[in-house]
Image (cartoon, rainbow, N blue to C red):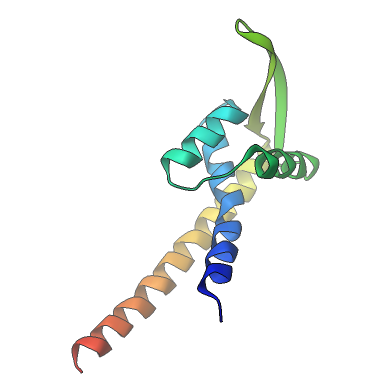
Length: 116
């Protein structure tokens, strides 16, 4: 079994959640999303981000608006739709449940290892 494959699957599983969480803060430009993910040590390239943003938009979770930019062409700013906000709230609860489950299982593993 390859640990790298498992790590990749774990990252993929939370990437959409992280992106929605970033956009929930307010209107955001794609490069700001990339910068925030990079600061969180979740490195994502544009070739991964843009298809995901398109998929989220096509699912009705995001909308966007074009804004003029002083430093070049107009920029696309993303924001959550009401459906996106409800979806994110559901993911928030799922995340809390997963964090609890992982913490319980890890704590039990660590407690068992300390008795050996």
